[in-house]
Every structure is written in C-alpha cells, then in structure tokens.
Length: 132
View: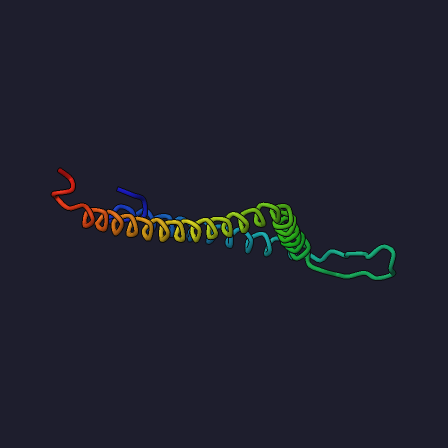
C-alpha cells in the first residue's frame, strides 16, 4: 500500500502531525523558559556612534538567532537561483516537447488516414478480373 493512502497512511499522517505539534510545543516551552530566566538587561553600544541601548538579554539572543536564520535563508535562496532557473527552463522545454509531440501525433494520424484512403482507392481500381 502506498504511503498516505488508505487507513494505514492516514494514521501515519495523523501521527506525524501530532509529533510535529508536540515538537513545536516543546520548542515554545524552552523558548519561554529561556526568556523568563534571562530577563536581566544588557547594554548594547553602537561603537562608532555615541549611542547605547538597554535591552533584555533574551531579546538580544533570540533576535540574533532570528536574524541568523533569515540571513541563512536568504543566502540559500540566492545560492539556489541557478537551480530554480534551470528548473523553469526544463518545465518550458517539457511543455514545448509535449506540444511538438501532439503536433507529430496529429500529423501521423492524418498520414495514416491518407494511407488508408489511398489503399482503398487502389483496391477499387484493381478489379478481381485484373488481379488474375
């Protein structure tokens, strides 16, 4: 039986959803616990400028993680640009080839019909007496 179909597949998908839910629930719990424990303030200095900012420590850590994830996602997206371009070209080429195949099949059908007609005409021209 294929995955994702039938009774067994639906149970597998349901179990996967529940496990995913509990995983993210645990991650959220850990983030909340981390945020509660690290409530103390830290001073962030913007060195070339004479500016300073007082922020809670967990905001600095979670903000840095968020920026890192977004930056990594952007870098990955840019790095895979060539693969996405090739995929678009492959889809276009497949569509063009499918269209060419459709045209060729239509032409083949027309040629078969012409061949049948010519065979019928040939048989009509040859009488049984001429064939003997």
